[in-house]
Image (cartoon, rainbow, N blue to C red; front, top):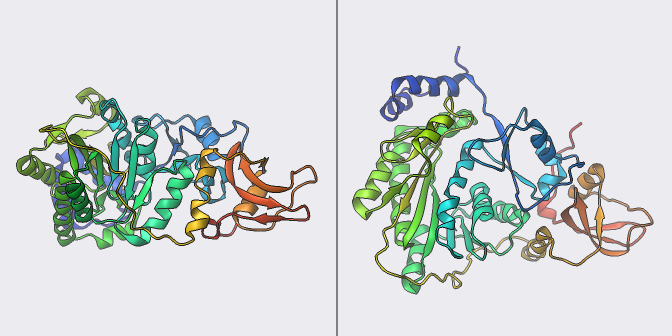
Length: 412
């Protein structure tokens, strides 16, 4: 018996997107198999090889994600919350198909200079942290999230990843477009990981199946076109827009790409060769986009297409005036932590073992040995900065941000 029951209309739409043999494989994978577990390692943070870290576990298993040099599969899901190196920003827990965003690196490099990048729908930060690791030196990155409640976790993930020069904004697509037009300042590269009907999440979250409907698909399609239209206007001539969704149907994917080609002159640009796609199990869509499908790849559902904007004239690319509308809680405590994750502070450091690090991250009381220096310290784990503390001898004032603390009970 199938583990989940899929809506008949969903299967009907799936047949419009895929040939029968592939369609059957996808349905079987969604219904009868479980998602893989994977992480993407931060290339700018090296965990001590002797450290008890999921990073070292992943590297020892040596099960690489084919399309991502920093991606690794795990055999089972560990307790990421109780791995201190996770809180250091040593890796990001990310679904493997989503790591294919890294295939745009040659196009980021092709500008031959620092560029302006926008992630329009950035929360919780998986694709943003990936792009930040790939962008040319000196580039400016704006992570935008128009759902205000999702901004705070986005900011935390970006700070821990280790680039505090990233701007986090809370604009709608039309507000960004208006700014770009008024200032004559445009982005060179825009990622639109659009809100979608979430068919690619069916295997991970059964509630996504219950919430799915043909009406939701139509609503998402309309919303996606509105965002794409505004972002195309915010893109510099000669720039690139990467459109992605975690859904399967042609209305939110192929037809949106065709709409961009017909109405705005978008040019679909290949990301990989046909031979590479065949080797990985990736489906090349008729529109020129790519489908990562459960049952075909070791990952969840992802569609993406790279759209190039023909160069008509030179434009000024200076986004220094783009202001954040975000007013996060505990601004001072959060912002004071930004430099710590880049190892840029000249303060004494004190390495914590795993048990002590978890106590620190949980905002519990900790006490250091007599050899520990007094005063303000940076605590580290596996050689990576974890947070501040003030050692006053008899005890340590735990300065880890209250809203970042571990709240769940410790596992055995």
